[in-house]
Length: 279
Image 1 (cartoon, rainbow, N blue to C red):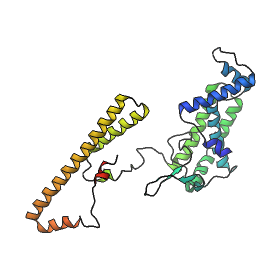
Image 2: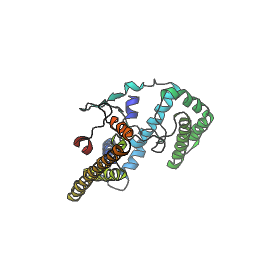
Image 3: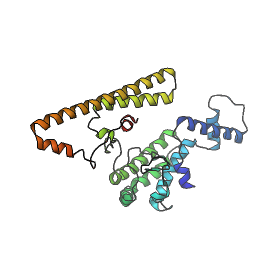
Image 4: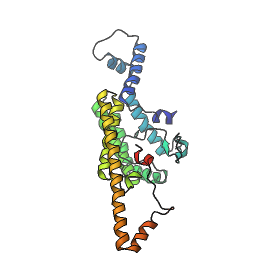
């Protein structure tokens, strides 16, 4: 239950609002007050019941579980217990994906947890033991003001983040190696092709959010432009290759045969209509 309550975390604003509405109805049911429509009735009822909003409770649960895992109060799950293969009908080897949202941790810039480096994290956290005790004393002595509690939580977040950054490192697009698709590695796939593809994907995302006639027309135009640029780039590459072969066959026979050997059955790269126009 502890793992499930912590991992299950809504991150879409619409879903969060739906869940908050359910809690608001429960608060009215407990207080037996269905008629109050003054500004802030739910907030005052929640204070009377000493109930925190669900979003704050989920944040607290994540911090509590992290503390219990570090102190050994709950067993840590092995990676294989919450990883499973993605369902796909393609013939390629399916990739594994995590069953929970990977951005559930308080700090969004720390890399994923690695069991091989967990000892270093615990060691760094033990060095901050005095700072954590000071924060605990602040909690006992502080008032119930919201800004005081937020300040203490922010300090605690920084302590855990600093302890995790050294062993796990930082994440982000600038620090991670960008994986390029096979098409990006093709000789004929130019920068202009890449720009057309980005415009096509942007138009596709925009159309999926709002299926209006204008967005549909923009998507159709972007798809047509992308395919046209792929065909033009591939045709130019083939034409330049033919010219190079003709020129080499006249001036350098040895180099000519070396080029032909690159297109043997073992190393030949086959370009078909399918793999050129797969979007």
